Image (cartoon, rainbow, N blue to C red; front, side, top):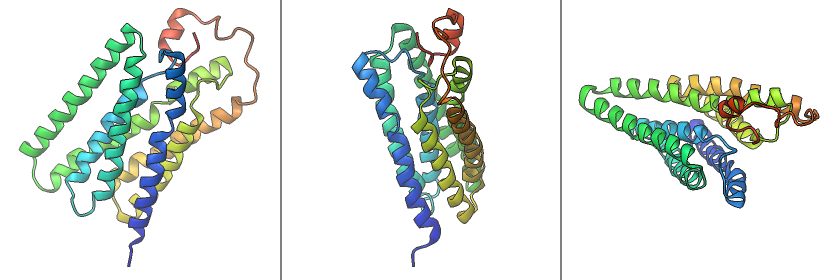
Length: 234
């Protein structure tokens, strides 16, 4: 008999893969305009690190971690593709910035893997990696919040990725259910936070979706504001 957690895990894989595919519309626009400078690359960098750590976490538990490994392997691959496209169409300044962040991702991941395998044993390995996974998953869910401030200031949702926010909310809901079934607190905690953050983003979207932005509200922003909010229209 198929266990409920396996069924929910399969559903979680499907929802997560759809979530990973949600930025495709953004990158169609990037390729069309031949520029990624109007979009923030931080969500892809943070998601790359998060999915890489989760893949390692799943590999530490060959019996129950297979569903975690499969979905996060897809996540790693998709984020690498997005980052390659982002960097290809980015300005020189942004290119150097995000290449540096990707290198930091890889160095951090390699350091964690070495320390985990050399200095820790048994269940303590999963504890260390699980805590790190939970931390960076919360960061992944929180990354799009940088756009919320832009939405509130400009009263426009033009650059708010609605489907990304929606997919993250649904994804968190499914994996929270999975975590409750298998009682994995490292999966449970970050996805509970993800539901809260995802709800906030969706609420802001629907509040400002029908509002009319002030004339030239974006054009009147200072260069410093634009630099702090890379998703704002230039």
